[in-house]
Structure formats: structure tokens, C-alpha cells
Image (cartoon, rainbow, N blue to C red; front, side, top):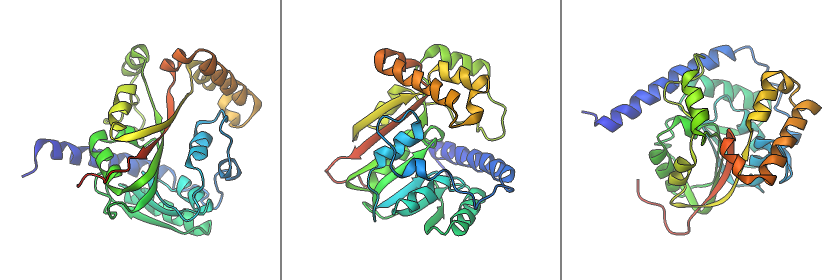
Amino acid sequence: MLGGHTLEIEVRNEAERKRSSEEARRRESENLASPRNVTRYMNPQQDTVYALEYAYYLLGNLLNKTVLDLGCGAGENSVVLARRAAKVVGLDISPDLVEIAQRRAQVQGQTVQFIVTSAYATGLTRESVDVVFGEAILHHLDLERAANEIRRILRPGGYAVFVEPIRDSATLRFLRRLMPSRQPDVSPYEYPLTQKQLGSLAQDFELSAMRRFDLPFSQLAGRIGWRRDCLGWRHRFALKVDRWLLKAVPWIGHFASIVVFQMHAKTFSAKQP
């Protein structure tokens, strides 16, 4: 008989599989041969105004390192990591998305090992991974269980880099509850993280870098269509204003909606599962 917490995890996992199945169905017609703009992520600068570029900056030199793409989804990051000469393992709970990821890697000529399993029980050998990377995955998970597994599989001195939605502003959290998403790709268990949750996640790691992005100003720019040009000047201008505000008035980071952070495994042995 399953314990209460274990049962809750299984219910959450099933909700994620259902959400991912909907996402995979919408992406069936995607051109898998067209890679993400790889040049942006090969050697990005530390002061970039783009959150994902900053995450790739924090990854550093990946040559021959074993990298786990946690929550790899349809494999966009997996193939970029492989292009950066990493030995990539892409993990996701969704068989439908992993099937797309496998086809993406094949048509782009990249070698990636994909596995379908839970982030709480990766099946990877203890202390076998140099780097864990994740884009918008932690806020789907039970953080304590996820942290335990990350700690177990990371080699001493290994590190993890994550890009996550964050809501430290009680006002913004309240507004989000007033306008809950009805999109099929949003599960009922996912919520943006808070600084308190991040602190709890990182308590057995060494938090080595953190930057916030995406203030309400740039979100408003997106609402009026400035982000449709992606790398266009209007979008970049909004992000530059964001960057200036966050550097000039650090406390305003309380209102940011994206956080990128890096945490290192401590040098003592990981806890037993």
C-alpha cells in the first residue's frame, strides 16, 4: 500500500505525463531538423541580458563531461549540450516528448542517451554525473525529493544550473491566482518558485551564482508584441532596461519572474538514497 506522500508523488507524475502528452501532440508537425539558434549558446557572455544564454554561460566548458538534461522535454537543450561536446543524458517522464527528442537528435546528427523516468528516481549510478541542467523543470517537482536525487548522482565538485520561474512578490502571486492558466500545457501542480524554496533546495549545496530576469516592464513589452521579434531591437531594449534596473536597484529583483542559478555539490559524499 502506498504511503500518503508517495501517492501524492504518483498523482503529480501522472498529471505531468498528461500535460506532456498534450504538448507532444501540438508539436508533432515541428521541423526537427531546424536547430535552436546554436550560436547564441556556444559561448555566451556573462553580462548577456537573456536568461537562457546566461544559463549556458554558467555551464562553462562541457568537453567530455557527463551532463544530465533534467526534464529534457522535446530535446532542444539536449542537442545544444551535445554540440558543446558534452556526453548528454536526456531525462523526462513523458514517453511522448522523449520520442520527439530522440528524432530531433537523430536528424541533427547528435548523440544523446534518452531515458524515460521520474526525476526522483533517475536510475543513474551514484556520483556519475558532472553537470545537471534544467530549464523550467523544478517548479513541476517535489523539491526535497528532486534535490536528494540531484545530490546523489552529482560527483563531488559537480554542479547544477537551472532556469526557473520565480514569484517572490505576494502581489504578483495573488494576481496569478486570480488569473489561473487554463492552457493544456500547464499542470495543476506547477507553480513558480520563491526565494525561500530556492534556499531550501540549495541548503546542501554551495550556491555559486544567481541572477534574476524579466521584470514587469519586460513582461508588459511582451504583452504589446515586442517579444514577437525574439532577438529584435525592441525586445532587446526591454531586456536591457530590465538589466539596468536590476543592477541599479537590486531590491527590485523581488519582482522578477525568472531566476537563473548555479549550485555546486559539496565535497563530502552524497547522501544515500
